Amino acid sequence: MKYFLSLCLLILLSMSVEAKPITLLSDDPKDLELFFKDGRYDIASDSYRLLLQNLVDVEFELKIAPTARIDSLLRQNKTICAVNRIKTEERLLYNLYSYPVHLYPSHRLYYFKDRTPLLDSMITQTGELINLNKLFGHYTSANIAIETGRSYGKNLDQQLTKLNQENILFRAGSDAYEAMIKLFQRHRVDFLISYPTIFKQYYSDNQSNIASVAIARHPLFIAGHIACSSTPRSEKIIAEINKALLKIYPTEEYLSMHLHHVPNTEQSLLTRRISDLFLKYKLLSD
Image (cartoon, rainbow, N blue to C red; front, top):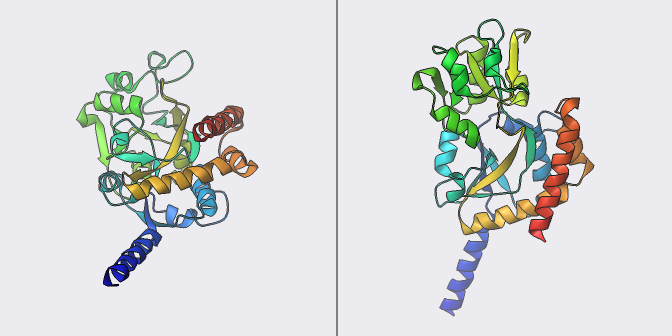
C-alpha cells in the first residue's frame, strides 16, 4: 500500500513539474509587451504572438536576458527555451530547434554617407558589399558595433573574426539592440550591422545621411527559430511548436503579417519563400 501511495505521489509530482510554465528567453525588453499586445509592430513579435495564440499544450513564461547569458543558459540540462535564434552548426551541438517561426529581411550594413561612403571597389556588380575586410581595408581606423555573443550567420561570423579587435566595439546587455543603434546615431561608431526592422524601430533621427547595403553571400532573408536546451521535455515542446507552425504557415494571417513589414520590392520573393517553407516542413513531418 505504501509503495502504491509513493508511486501515485511521484506521478502527481511529475505531472505538476510538467505543468509548470517553461522559461522563454528574449534579449529584447520590448518583447515583454509586444508579444502580448494586439497590432502590427515587427515581424518577430507579431509572429511569436501568433504562435503563442496557437499553442495549446505549452505554456511559456517570457523573461529577458542578454544574448551571452541566453547562450549560457541554453547549454544547461534544465529545460529553457529562447526566441529569435539563428540556427548554426555550433549551436546544433547543444540545442534543439523548432521549425522557423518567421522569415525577416536579413542584416544590412549601415553607414554615414558623408563620413564613410562606400567606394565602387567595395561593391559587387549587383550592388552588395563585397565583404567587411574590403571595407576595413580602406577605413582602417573606423569601428563597428557588434553585440557580444550574437551570431550574425555563418558567413558574417567568419568575416567578423578576421577583423582587428580595435575595429570592433562590443556591446552586451538586454538593451543591446537599442544601445548599439544609439551609439551609431551619436556617431560613436562608424558602422552598424542590423536588421532593417530593428533599425527602423530604434533610429529616431532624420535618416537622410544614413545608407545601408546588403552583404554578398549573406542570405536575403533569415529564419528565426525557438531554440531549447537539449532535454527530453524540450523534445516534446519543440514537437508541439512545430505542429502549431504547420497550421500557421499556410494561413493568410501569417503571410499578411510578414508582407506588412517588408518593402513592395521584396514581397513576391518573401511570398515564395514562405510557400517553400510550408512545403519543406510539411514533407518532413509526413
